[in-house]
Amino acid sequence: AQSVAQPEDQVNVAEGNPLTVKCTYSVSGNPYLFWYVQYPNRGLQFLLKYITGDNLVKGSYGFEAEFNKSQTSFHLKKPSALVSDSALYFCAVRDAGGTSYGKLTFGQGTILTVHP
Amino acid sequence: DGGITQSPKYLFRKEGQNVTLSCEQNLNHDAMYWYRQDPGQGLRLIYYSQIVNDFQKGDIAEGYSVSREKKESFPLTVTSAQKNPTAFYLCASSAVQKNTEAFFGQGTRLTVV
Image (cartoon, rainbow over all chains, first blue to last red):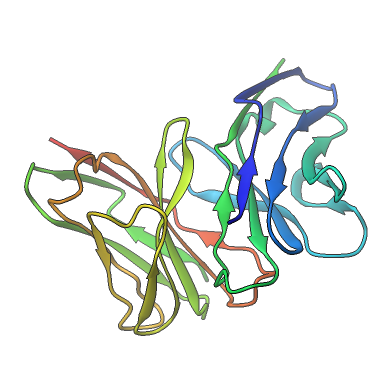
């Protein structure tokens, strides 16, 4: 079985400060990892993904994420937060191997609030 | 414009009624998914389909049914057997390769009245 944990329900940062939203995962094989953002009453928007290669992945809107295989983590980061980054963030995983049929499993989400 | 369209945006259901949520995509994706979103519980997979005329149960399929008669369409029926159907429902699609991201519709908010 595959699973994702986002240990923080909420993250609060001041505008201009760096932000980190944490994610850990569990899969039987190699992971494909994704981050999505959701604004109120809207669908999810794709931010970035890790498939293979460089452990630091860059994505949309200045976000990046660091893959750490030994810690089974994929934390989302941004060097300088904006008020407009305030939203609900989801981490997701697919098992690259096996017969999981492409099933995408999500964490419970982290509410990011950036204060002016 | 390519994308996923869910309709309606808001839906109200009386106790004991079945309702069907529509999901259409023009991205030529083989895989389609239905998720349920409740506050504090993230997204839970209801059903998914990798190909026309085939679909698999997800983690919370009880009280729901789907069909996949066309590649573009993956409607979800919430039956009267679903005891707590009030939620935000999200449809997604992706290419069948596992390293591709999923694209989401704007969601349907279902409320039982």
